[in-house]
Length: 159
Image (tube, rainbow, N blue to C red):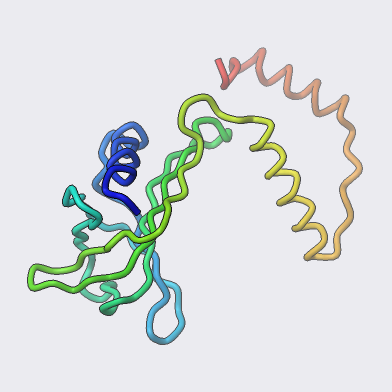
């Protein structure tokens, strides 16, 4: 990954969170268990992030890791995330994650609602298949009426 493209992604972090310092560090420990912990991360201007993590949640040298920054709200508006991938590097000063793969950057600028709902539909189909369920028979007229009543009473959450 080039320093320039990582710099562009780092520029999105302030837009994403207002404070780009606190992502979630994820990795699989030496016993095969997933570890997910909020950490402090500072970009060094190159291809590494210096990470301050709890001692018990520090990955081993060379361990594959990811750093996730995200935001969302309860009604599925303002969804956005950035995931960076790399390897843990233990230095005399602590832990660094050396970014070595293309990041996953989603939903900057105007949301692509067609894509979002395509993913929601696919996730739903997978869930129903995996659990041997059938699609529920919904009375859409009643649901639309309830939605209109809710908007009339509480306002439009998208407004």
